[in-house]
Length: 76
Image (cartoon, rainbow, N blue to C red; front, side, top):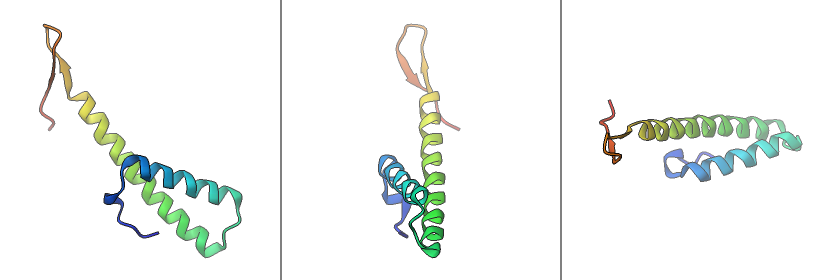
């Protein structure tokens, strides 16, 4: 459960987060396992949010020129 998050794609991290949520919703985990799963889930949520923020910044950096072509403006 302590796999380095930087090795995960956004999609893999989200799938793992969804699986953890399902496990916690069922309520069948032992207390210590539930706490560990919750901690992992919190880290995955933060990682996914960071990836979404980065993607949004990249999309916002794309601008349309007057002639209709697209260009990327430098990100600060």
